[in-house]
Length: 245
Image 1 (cartoon, rainbow, N blue to C red):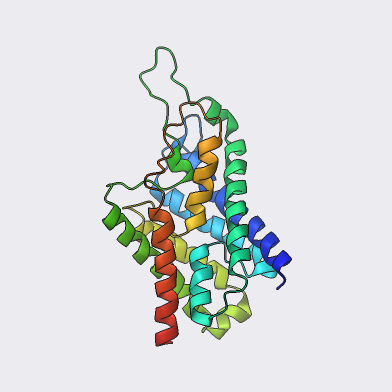
Image 2: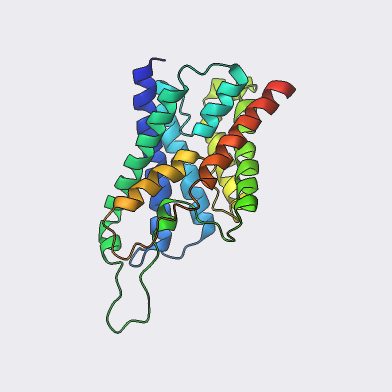
């Protein structure tokens, strides 16, 4: 794969991932959305379908990593680092693009995020649409959660490569998508399961600059956790896979 193909593939695939992911969070969160308050299960499946659409689209160009933790895990296992920077740059740009697209889809709902005269309902905080927020703010515990959750993503992804039938049938991405749904349902409660540094960082950057009424804080004090945790988790998964398989 050429650097150009990897770069374009990761931009497109990650943009689709974040469009679906931020989109389902907006659908569940924002007032005047038909899917408002439909719950965590909907969010988990929305993100899973985002992986499905994004990875299948990007796969012919880049292999469809869409996640620096996956890229780092593969590099740790194989020792091939020369194209890592291309993957990571494409993923970050794609994540920012996807966040902007999700904002545009829900533009009217974001613009309506104001206090209505005579209403007791306050404007909706919007950071959770774009990035993760821990349910209990404990950096050490939050970091451990992200490390373990990311290992639970990357190690199976690496192991799936040993199952010949998955590759031949083209269903590897489908299985990974279901894995992401499972992680969301089982491990997502404490932190919102970033498990992907650019999935959190790119949209957080976009949230900082978007003209959203009453958008609230972008919480940069916490932003290092969903970046560092998944990177550590991805690297550990690569080391474990290399040693055990």
